[in-house]
Length: 247
Image (cartoon, rainbow, N blue to C red; front, side, top):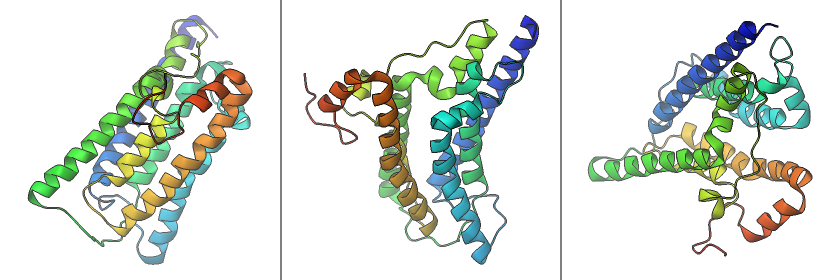
């Protein structure tokens, strides 16, 4: 494959991943804020329940698989010209964005609203929701935004280089807990202002994944980094930050 062709493939993958990211995150912000009431999902009744269960399960199951060794190998074959291994982070980010977009754009709402704040209370709840997103953004930044967004993969290929992976992060929010990204993800599920049975089901299931999923991630880190990561585990709590950071 020529240099020009490699750059075109890298640019197309990058534009697709980032465009899908904006669509997925935009739909997520809107629908979580509205208690999963806004959607393009056409199903009703029992069909809606079945469709929503599939949407709830597809993200944690596929996400966990793609983070495994076999999943990474599959991602490494999803680009032409032997570029797949170098575009893994970009492809992964694009697939994750599609999963998020499917969940929040194709949800079939029940139409039941349990609670919606008004006045000053609505302002407080909206502030908590915004703060949760800011926390998640900070966690993603500390984890390495180029890696998390797929920017690292396609820009490296575009420049004719191999992606360079940084060691596991221990700075910023990672000084206070080992899984701030999953913590931030869980917070946005619970701080939206509108409560519906749809949102409760989503919050319970995906929060369970936020607690269980990182355990598998840490097993991979132990195999990769060994005693260095074990010392980090001993020093920093899993998800509930300490009020006082250990020296």
